[in-house]
Image (cartoon, rainbow, N blue to C red):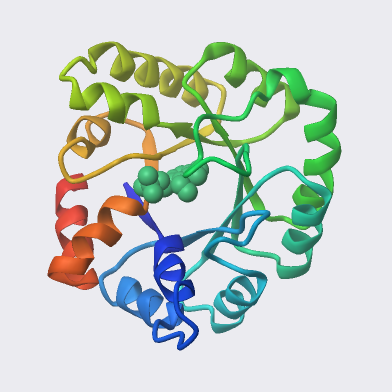
Length: 236
Ligand code: PXP
């Protein structure tokens, strides 16, 4: 199972002051030293953390493969084609949300997504759609011919806190089974942490996790290298 680490919140902390004491490039060097597979950044419309300069710098320095999370807008399509990251993941975005709140409604935006995705796919950029673990969304992904999904684990993470996560794990497992039979690669992410990741890492055929907030929080106390090492041990 590969691990991608989302470093958005290094940029969040950097952005609260003008002195800019955090160079995100240093974080990515530590990720690489600790055998993380890729670095994920979410370039939001409001640029609340990562900005274009960061994305371009990470691509230019090529420390780790860059996974660029973006909303399906014309602006983001242009940036993605210009930067040509190793991978991109298309997410829904609401200006007021604290973090991504759910998966893309692929089923109800087929035409729009097809138009958005085609130029990106032509560039050979590995493209994933971030979806809730629902069959109707997976069918729509398959219809679009997209070969990678990232399964939204946010609802599972919430139900884990209440100790009632069986149903959510079964939903994820079901989607992974169907996707795998369709030749669609499965990733997972959102809300994963040091406690809840064990159940997800037991699911066969999830080949990549993208994790941010919990690792960055842990790193404030124990350092980024130690936190990443600990997370990698948990996912095997
Ligand atoms: N995957 C996707 C598609 C996301 O939007 C996010 C949050 O930016 C993550 C993974 C990481 O989520 P978290 O920060 O909760 O680990």
